[in-house]
Amino acid sequence: MTLCVHAGIAAADALCCAGLGEHAQGENHNDAVELLARVDKDAGRALRALLALKTKAGYSHTSATAEEFKRAGRNAEALVLRARERAARSPGR
Image (cartoon, rainbow, N blue to C red; front, side, top):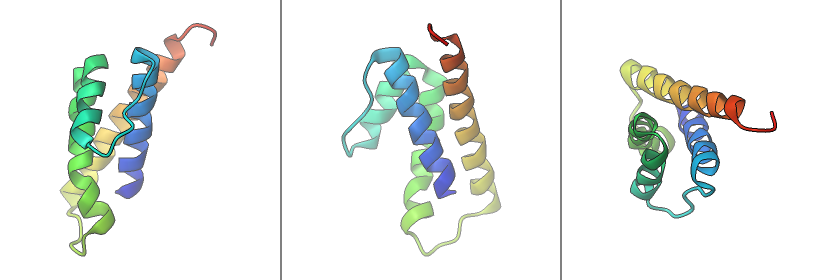
């Protein structure tokens, strides 16, 4: 699940850089979600869902549920696909 969270964050940064010329750099996850939502509201929701799992995935002794693993995979995949689509549309590719 941690890999899904990291993939989603990287994809979100790529989307923000492509769409806004900047990416979130602070520790506040809400700032990152709000910045991404300026580019793509659905992507912002996907990032919010992933970040909600980040602490449990990386720091908790409580195991993630099967549903949480599925949710992480779906949201990471959605963000990565959006970033790939955006890259394919970028000039110079």
